[in-house]
Image (cartoon, rainbow over all chains, first blue to last red; front, side, top):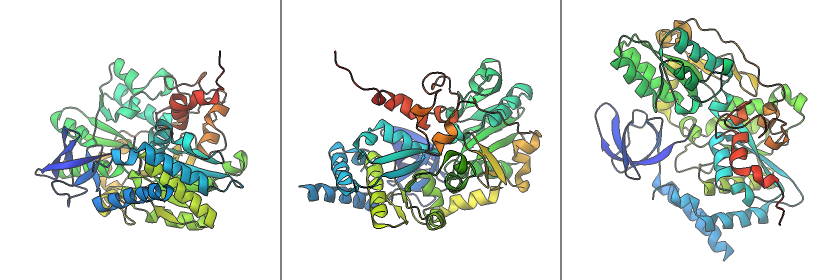
Length: 74
Length: 379
């Protein structure tokens, strides 16, 4: 039920609407809750609304933590 | 970066599993509850449960809004559609949930009720605009993720003065339910809960932030780690919980830093506070009445509140007597302990809350784990 998907913002429209791309599928959603979202940002989309922004630096940091585990095993 | 595949790497999962086995103290047992149904589903679907050390057990919590929605609330929606002739809209997840008298929203539709499945509450609002001669009701369910979109459509309906739109509110609150698991009077009935910590929900926490779990972690001395929905996120969060238990810590930690902050989404919180207020009490299927665990529409927006508009009254409907959902949701029993599991109670014909949606603990176990319980016999 609380399934939400990361999607890339490709176009901002009027009235807090925006087009997002999810693996080639485009959909118009509301960005009223994340008005700071810009084209190229990844947003978390849930029931037609962006709930939050994904932070690429933080995502890289989490992946780096995993990579560190891998190295410490070797 | 697609934010999905990177967090599903099998080699890294095995490394994390090795690390978990190395750090979990063989002299102790670990029981953690993942509150959120999305996590329950991900643990089962990706086989994460098979990678955990034998002395570490995951208990599946009540965080599936479709599962915990009491039958009496669906009855209210069906009554509106069948007897009052409204156009009733809701999320696909609720359509098949069995209600009273052998009905469900889907079966009510087959009897001629005008029931529409929508992807977003904004779609229901659009139906109201397009059909000014019809009354349109949105059956709203969900935790803190679906509540802000519901608040936005009510605000928008008020702005446009849409007289034919209302919302039947069933929004429930995560922190209240987590606390209830530990302090409800039923704990005496079911015994002491062997819970050492919680995996906190991902998308709920995007909205509310990590701060609301802090009083809980302090008061109950239980660690909480907020985790993303991908398998590596979950395994990393479980490792963080093991470390907290080993160190005797009970802190709120955030594994899902790429989306969750301490404060959460303030705009979303403000929209919710403007439109909704807490209910004194709300029934959760499988848990019973839980104080201050749900929201209702504020009197200022009463024109858009289906309960007020149609003078609806809630009539509780008891579950099957032998249903063990109450004990399963609290982690005292496992799905396979229930007499009804996979016999009378199946995903096609659910008897209790845990079997209702694919995110329920019984449904997840039915779909992905039921044959693990049976020993393989060669020949």
